[in-house]
Amino acid sequence: MQLYHHPYSLDSQKVRLVLEEKDIDYTSFHVNPITGKNFDSGFFRKNPTAKLPVFQNGSHILYDTVEIIQYIERIAMVSSGGDESSLSSGEVVEWIYKIQQWNPKFFTLSHVLPKYRLTVSKFLRRVIIARMAECPELASAYHLKLKEAYQTEDKLKDPEAQRRSEEHLERILDEAETKLSETTAYLLGGEFTLADVAFIPVLSRLALLNMEEKYIATRPNVAEYWNRVQKRPSYKKVIGKHFDGWRRHKTLFRTWCFVQIRSLLKQY
Image (tube, rainbow, N blue to C red; front, side, top):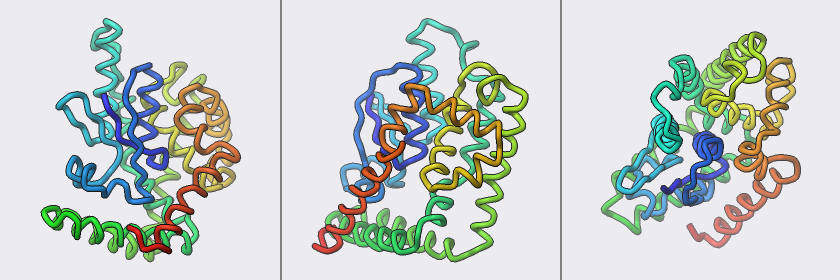
């Protein structure tokens, strides 16, 4: 089994958390979306949406995050000799989809300083144009991604779109706060479920953006939950390893240097 992913991708984090929690072996391939590695022709032919993650098991390839998570859960069920009663409940699946409807990419970009966001955006557009020239047979698919990049920049100028994104996030957090006031440890009770797998990366992204005080600390049950899940081995391996404490600066600095140097040298 192969997973094409990157720590920057929230959906990648969700899938990796499931793999670690279920103790399933897999081969990891890092595809950095900020440096445009998801537009390399080898990956782009496999997945013209250029989105992460991509999960491959033999000839079976999955692109949808929820489908990947549920597929891995079934693999774990079969491996352990369990039956379908061990699969996630309807409530768990409902929470996964609820969280999945929020767009973390737009929220993240809208809270990144313009000088960084615009530099990366310009770099990625040039990467797409360069790949388009190298692989003319994929030009139409690359053109769609280029158009999408310009549309995202236009959307980021719309304060109403930003307001809707923030309100959507707050609704999820408020519902989680209420739910956690009724449970003992995790989102849907005393046991860690796939709902937690979907929710943890959201909190991690808020912490990465230095928005913990605004969105997490103001919700005591969510704050307590956040402190608890950061102690799980799966969190430490998937997220903490890259973004806790000084590690976040190392991770971000390396990517920023790559973009700056390649831009300076015009190597896209």
